[in-house]
Image 1 (cartoon, rainbow, N blue to C red):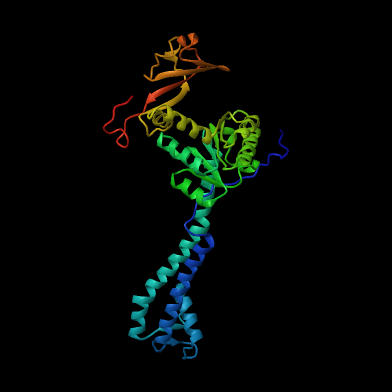
Image 2 (cartoon, one colour):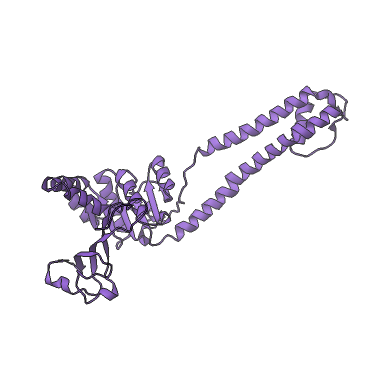
Length: 354
């Protein structure tokens, strides 16, 4: 299968979720400002006898509106002025705080909608341009969200995770975890270019539909030929398509559930142990890592970490712990081991590792 869409250099800044839409925020601010101005107009109109119009001596409603606006904006031409003690007291005690509130609202609005947003856009652009070695999560449904939570719990900095999803509600949840977010269709080249998949350390795909996930994998592999890709596929007959599209790892949650069920049939603790291995919240976990220089030349069952070595990945071969080749580790090997979870106050109290 080949890609026909050209790669377009379209900049899309990472977006942040908002409590209210931009138009609603602006309407609330302006509404509050105009309400305060209306209150001042009514106060001035009620106390118009305390005002003096140097032009014609008569204070009309239009004069009151005019005086309120030049008073609120601190222009103060002096043609209309408070002359009575009560009018001056009202200006000092009531109108001055309202004037300051209105100015604050307008200045705050200008800051929020122009200065702050321009700063945020620039800042996010800088973050986006420096993205490297990050984890891209394409799809933040059930599987994607659980993966992100597990990564964060394992110690991954949320700032290294970029989540792409078309639903703003899901992105709000991801942002709540501290992740960078971008709303868009992950099947599009420009969206994946925006999150710099080419410089990512790994890409996790879970779009909820197999056809969409396969297309996302195809797009990612087209843009990032060497980046590891893991995809969630629910139908067995789509697993081959996902691998042909370029996925390095294909996870079938239905099959994994079947493994747990089958394990429970063999013994009541097998399924529990498998779940334990898969989560950092358990007492042990599976770890994949490059062999350490101090381990080169030694056997798989004598790892420096103290974990139990299970498997070696050497070039294109898989070597089990029982095979003769597992007796000597080589530089460049990747080992999979079972390691005890680092004790913490959250989930290790009262337990010993093992």
